[in-house]
Length: 78
Image (cartoon, rainbow, N blue to C red):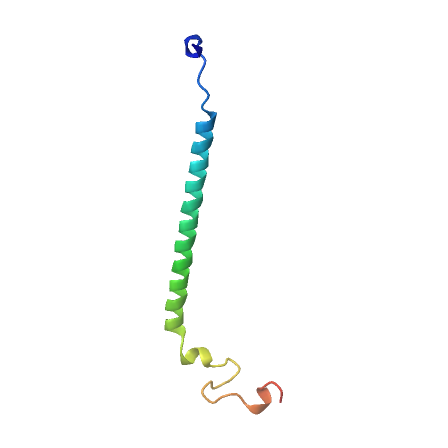
């Protein structure tokens, strides 16, 4: 009889559940994007390490001729 006088049914519980579901969906999407971003960054770092790795990474900027090595007085503990 409540609808005969223009009152509306209480939908607050359903609206709360819908809001909770939307929030959970948003959280899961953000988590998935973060995981995808992290995976991409790791792949990029691996790729960069392959390209720039090797002997070049071992050469010291302290040496005039990097292939000659470091002089004894330049080392720590000397």
